[in-house]
Length: 190
Image 1 (cartoon, rainbow, N blue to C red):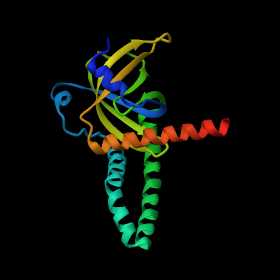
Image 2 (image 1 turned 120 degrees about the vertical axis):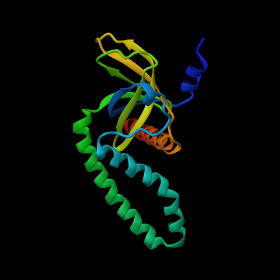
Image 3 (image 1 turned 45 degrees about the vertical axis):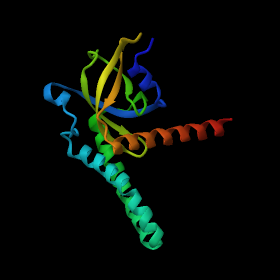
């Protein structure tokens, strides 16, 4: 019978995706802390902060749009320019993080293949760049399973921990956009 944690993880919709992903094990106080993680890469932190600020300012843009359409349209153009800069930063980060890999992603966690096993209950700092919007997220996670695959790789299943509301909503928006894209693709093929 599945545990309550397994039932909770199953409540989230899962998507197969291709993302840039890297992780580092956390130990000691780092593993138990609940504060935000910071990456050693200033570019990654910049990319992450750009998306968090964009998310947090959306309600302000809606209010401005109600009062002054011209100003709102100008701010949208500025936002698009910033998005283009973020995509350029993401391309640089992809060289550092490595080639995108196939994962199974949900709001609750991510599973992916890795060359070596990682012990269950190991705490990780997972760095992800979600495409095409070049969304950079650095999240805490705990390994919940590690299964050897036929090809000698190990499937790591992780559960996200201590996500902020903004991080959760950004991840949920990415998953919904990916679902919509997959539905459009399926309609076009049939």
